[in-house]
Image (cartoon, rainbow, N blue to C red):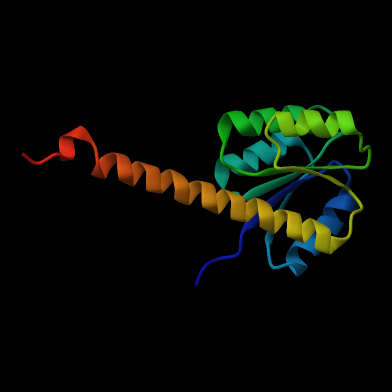
Length: 147
């Protein structure tokens, strides 16, 4: 049996973390919660995470800086920014830095669930594509030629 995806939710507001935990659990995901980016990184060092949801505005390390740290250490993990301070400029910057999507904090639970599922499907396809390319390179490399 395949285990449900593990989602790391990082937000400095305890009430919003609780709300995310409920939404993620109800959608069939395994939620992990962190109150800051450093705490989120520590969790990712200890445990496999399939996707990261992060608030944009947090003390210490903001969402965009956290995104850069995740891209540096865990480049294949999809990252979705959540914000109550939506702006086109910030959304464009987040996507340029490698975020999968940029969602308003109080969007309907179904919208968030669909965005998460799209990100997870994209990661799965990217992983399959990478494995397929590696297989082709091994199968059709110069060393594989039989004369």
